[in-house]
Length: 174
Length: 407
Image (cartoon, rainbow over all chains, first blue to last red; front, side, top):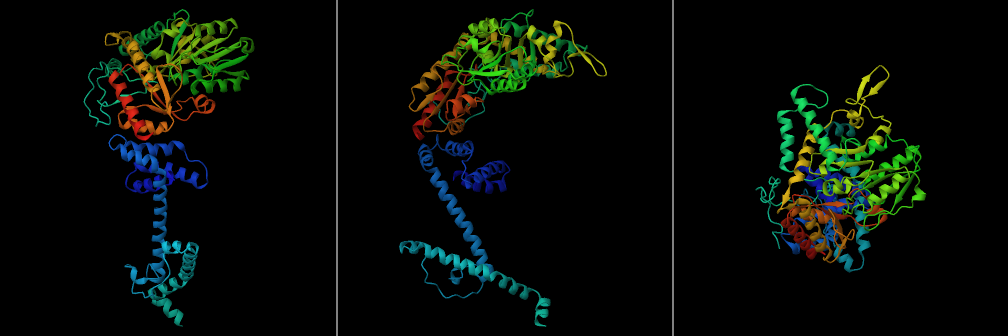
């Protein structure tokens, strides 16, 4: 998991500094191995760990101790949060394109949307669903919503084209 | 605690004559890879570049003649250094130990030998060429075990007439070939050859080679305080036996359309392994390194004696640390170890933050450390003439701090 977290970090840093691109490449090799359930290059993992701990072990030993103990968990949390964030952004973008709001279930909560209207949903959030013992229902609902969104994409493109091109509008009217 | 994690400054280090260019806060413990170079060597190389930068053994103008003279002096000094006579041995210069070993083995016919023998703790530079030699010639390859004290106990009857390629001292923990003279005797009784990987011996224990009846020894000048270069000291009879197939300038008497003749005469024998231009500055630097080694003292004693005291002290201190596993039972020019709870690569990186530069991994001894002993990656502290007690104290304090914080 540390390799995946390292890849994300080095990929972003590599945009600004060439020094990190080589590291991003090595991390990517590690990611490929991890996602195919093969062991990562142990040297790279320990190199990342050593460099990170090295920054603190002499100046802030307690921080180093904490990181040393929890680094794999912290990396896992970082990866999960990053992936979740990326998915949320992509979904919001898709919703914005299709529905003119990033949250079709509660349009008013989305500051990026146009003047879309929606009837406020009473569907439970993830925590509530979990507490109700129905997280799979929550997930299924989102999958259905995603499917409906994808299904509307062609219509949405058609609407956009009609709005943008008078010639197409005229041809269709004929 | 001694200055753990102190910010490094760039002021030169006092008390390290010959190495005063080192910045404060740098504690280099990787001499087994390459030693630092004393100022005398740096000045000799610089002097060559600035005042007589010419090719040797080819030209007649004053610069070239000076190079020839110094190269000749270096060859003589090298022979004296390993206690051999010019009547019997030749000094050849190469890139490094690896290149020298491959140069000789690749040009040695195998038809007169029954086995090629090596030991399990060899560096890849020696271990691998014996594989290719066996594959090329069809000669049986034998890998013998080293005892804890570094000796090898062969069954002579099984080996027949053999070519031996073994190190005089291990780059893992500095353990020396304890029964080397006895082995040489046994090998020669069978009509075999003794080739010594002397990469770690030449810089620390050249006396081991002086009474040893080897057929060739291979060294790296950059591990004995000289520039980056290799050196071979080879018996003339062996050199003449080689089927020279790696050819180039500087080694031929004449060249015709489809044939050539090598330079004749013992005075030109070295050229058979010196194809092309040599590292003239490296050879001149080697001469300076050999002169420097003769005279360098620390606290009134020969530097090797002082360094050995540091090695013993470090070994004992590490042995006393909980969780530390040392390779070998006794101190040597290198000390390799690992900690149960901390990866050695991580340890090396953390130590680097404290200015302690040490190598981690398997030190090109993959077979022995990784596959035979199945050890995790190790950290190696290797010693050189530039180190002082305060360097060792700082390294040990840093190591102890890391262990107490993270383990």
